[in-house]
Amino acid sequence: MSDSTSVFRPGLLAGQVAIITGGGTGIGFGIAELASALGAHVVLASRKPEHLAPAVEALTKAGGKASAEQVDVRDLDAVKAMVGRVADTHGRIDLLVNNAAGNFYVPSADMSPNAWRSVIEIDLFGTFHCSQSVYPVMAKQGGGRIISISMTLHYRGWPLMAHATAAKGGIDALTKTLAVEWAPQNIRVNAIAPGPIPTEGVRKAFAPPAGSGVADVFAAVEEKMAAHAKRTIPLGRWGTPRDIANMVAFLASPAGDWVTGGIFVIDGGEWLAKPGGWGTS
Ligand code: HXC
Image (cartoon, rainbow, N blue to C red; front, side):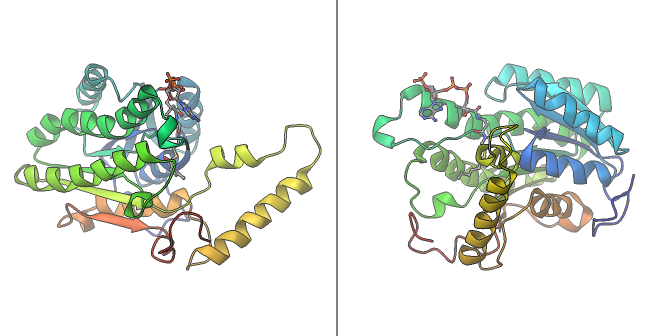
């Protein structure tokens, strides 16, 4: 399978086995698309079967190798069992992408214990559960790569996102610690901090109801969003899942051999340009 839109050489990741949590949609699916186009077998791991089946179908239809694992990353035993199945089936795990995340805006003063727990458990516990579970497989085979998807919102204060910013700050710290702790096993541990990327979930939220015949309203919203990006992002556009996938491909390739403990901001310069933080644009 080749991908004429990729700058990477065909077969770059051939023979690799990659687990991508939350790989059925959005950024995770973008990573899965590129990794499978470059020859990896991708295992999409997600809670929702309705996300998994169409994603696997799309990847295999395009000529890639893909399979699905239904798992909730909050459940350590389930994660361990999933990793065991992948290792038994494929004999190895070269790449783990910790992409599964959940969040929503909520005032901190009103956040229920369960709301706090849900996001911390998906984002931070989930990242640790998956990383710890692939460790013995990667250590035994002589190395591997772990890449976690972080964010930039916690670099400044980000009201209404206490749970997610705390979790992603934890992921950054975990990335640095695991990078040092697991370097002797040749496991490279890095993170990527994406800027704003309007995935299909975001687009759906803005779309007019089906059959309402107001396509022009949607087009106007898109136009407004593009104008907003031009104003607020130094490089003048929203990000795409492929922008993030490109960094994953680099880190997963031999070019990433001496890279560990890094947190790579890929955001078109967005967070640097907004020192005022919340509410500025
Ligand atoms: C207040 C909310 C809430 C909301 C959920 N809760 N949504 N509180 N405002 N909008 C509360 C619930 O009331 C409940 O608390 C608790 O959170 C758990 O909710 P559940 O729906 O039972 O949890 P669960 O099914 O586990 O769902 C997890 C989730 C959900 C995080 C709440 O949103 C989810 O699964 N999201 C996955 C998809 C997602 O969010 N993707 C975004 C990734 S994008 P109580 O007390 O009532 O029991 C991304 C980019 C960041 O990360 C960019 C940000 C700008």
